[in-house]
Length: 575
Image (tube, rainbow, N blue to C red; front, side):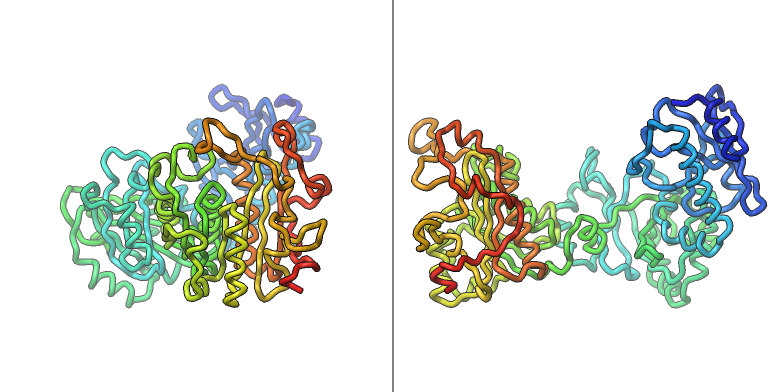
């Protein structure tokens, strides 16, 4: 890494005015830049290694004004502004040429400042767009965060409950503001709000803003900012606040604001705490505000629009109805991935119990041992994905041969690894002309691979296309997708017939679940409209070690994870 003198000399050769500074024994580099007739000083603290984009801090930012992409803070007894030029760790920096990296970074910092200083319209728009990050800069993080569940952001009064005593982690360690006007209320009350453990902390009001200003520059501006914002709201909202919520007196109040900014709807919060331990009403005037200490506090918003898209879920899948048959290692992973994708109406069928030998390749933790797999899984999904309406049943696949029931689903996913039952179920669908799409998925032992097929009845290609024998071209008993030759003993016997199992690990079940879930989600989103198949291919080493013979398809297969048409021209059903 270059030393200070070398950096200064290099920057001077590029036309920059710079010198060395001393901050309480720490050597830094000062760069003077003139922007719009203002002298700007940038400070660089050299490091021994360039592991990210070099940083230049703005000196005395408050003297320049409220600038977009600049966060103010104090260090070494001085005011600095941190300039956001990019996610520094995501930029690939040429650390072998440190002087070039420093010059490039300096130019980026200057470009941002020049834009913010010379273009006030752009600066204001950017301040509004990044409102949330600016607000967090004035937040007080001494208190626990407040978890707010609210869907529409309309004016509403809400009770705020204290964190559960002694809880340092999880939702019970937060203050809870549970909106009454939300479909989440019932689920949140079950999992988050235990009235025997939570006590009432105070009242909150949700306030949608018709006008919004950039966040205050520092904490000292909060009260004036608040009064200014109130003065710009519609008179009917202020009257409603005063008439309906301005009379209740308490020791603590929260105001949850929401407003539209260029980046979407933003939520933020002010906390009001009584100064003298007396109850007061919600402060709506400068005189009333004298009774309160005001703080900006962090909140965690929990609603569909805030949580689901951020996690990659699709809001359009909320009304989709899916049946999942099989809650084992593959099925449990599928249930989790479908729920995470936004599928809320999921019915899980499995008669088995969750046993201790299932622990190492199943998504459920040990707390669910001896539960029914389907029941434990549905409970776990509803706890993690609070909008999930997952329910469970002990019925087996062949118990579902009911036209009325099957026609209620948009998709059926079968993950039981039982080809005979799956073919019998397919025969029933054909016999009754039931046209619900079906995905069958299974994995093979010893890590050689796994498969999924999507059977859309109105399209060419069906499950039985995957059972056309490659040699006779007639329908066989084993899938032509398999990588292990049929009629081999693929189970491992540890201590008798009751302790036989197929050898595969959690990675294999997860990979198989991923290809099946991907197929399901793409179909539900309308991205796949034809009957399809997909396989993943693993290593043959363990199979060879156990004397397992693999198929020609295994050795010739080069389309791992690639979705392909399912149709087979010699299928007696499709033709």
